[in-house]
Image (cartoon, rainbow, N blue to C red; front, side, top):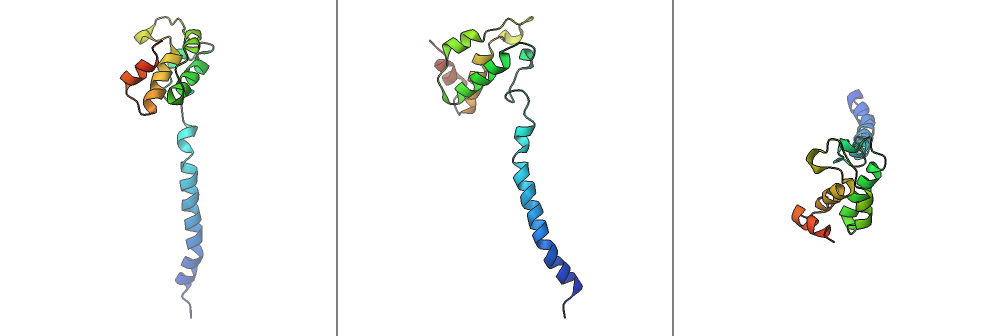
Length: 115
């Protein structure tokens, strides 16, 4: 003779395991869904400057695993009014952040930008 409680628990177990697995699976996508700007470290000073978001993204990507591109950096110098914290160089700023995210110190990243 089976107990009703045991029978129901046996049927619920696979459902609970599946639900937990789905939660863990979909949770892995959440950080990417809520990222702000091209990268999380995006400076909002560049929101209304045409071309600046792509400059930022290019700089960050290069900082992670490519050399500093002097030509791209020169294309990506913008005048900001007012110019807070000497901003106006999204490629350069994002390169430094990407380089640091790759595990380097800021001092080492700075040396990669020298001509």
